[in-house]
Length: 367
Ligand code: GDP
Ligand code: MG
Image (tube, rainbow, N blue to C red):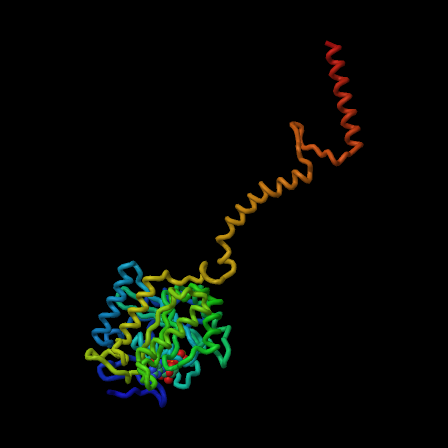
């Protein structure tokens, strides 16, 4: 196995038979430019042909292709995946793993190495896969609101087919901070976001603690995270997000067709991409507007209802109240205000009436 050439402590990605090309700074193709225009200025763009696709094991290429074909059959030629999670959980490594390029900087110390989100689009035939890597949601031991705002700006700009909520398998508990993250993401993006989410647990090649099976360890970790998401995100438990375990390290065990496999035999990349496509096919793409939390957009559907309610109120409540208060029992001459008496006006009217009668009489006598 050829060792990677990156600096000490960095994950290595280059292997025998799986040569990974350095990224070519293209992005100049028509589609690349088109993708770029869809994005915010503060998102790094990176779009180009998926030239490293052919370096995947043949079996993996087949899985990718048939997953993309399922979407193409439904008239969908793109899959956009947004990666969220704390620092150091393996978001950037997951992006690199999925596109098969050492594109995103990976930080061995878990400190965020990017201060901007990065959208990487790769074109394969008629299909475009876009992965949006984001900085960690947490800085120190606090939720980083600026990052959350940037994430919601991205969601405003782009339809998101799938969210990868990335965390590590080898952590036992769901912490208070994790719960805060689920709560904040829900507050920002609405609980609908969880319908498009796959919980992705990295560091999947792990020996379970003594007396526990691998399957038990995995299902306990997944249950805890799903439970916390359902509670904090107000998601019914039968709509809990799917979860997959992956291993990003190139030292991971392989099957006969040289695909990375987990200790339970799961084929890592195939399982991840199939789950992503399944979620994309079962949930409508997440749209910040009008489903999201924007107060303007959220209330728009109320406008006709409020209008109808106003009409009903005026007709049956307000008008009746005014009539009652006003003693509005008018006759063919118009409204009559029996309570209020303008003596001068009444005298004038009486005089006018007398004058009218007098003239009528004179007229008749004159005839
Ligand atoms: P990010 O901050 O979420 O983008 O995390 P990175 O992708 O920078 O990863 C942080 C560290 O975890 C790096 O040293 C990676 O090499 C390592 N790492 C990420 N995923 C895995 C994995 O699945 N297995 C192992 N063993 N290490 C991983
Ligand atoms: Mg990163």
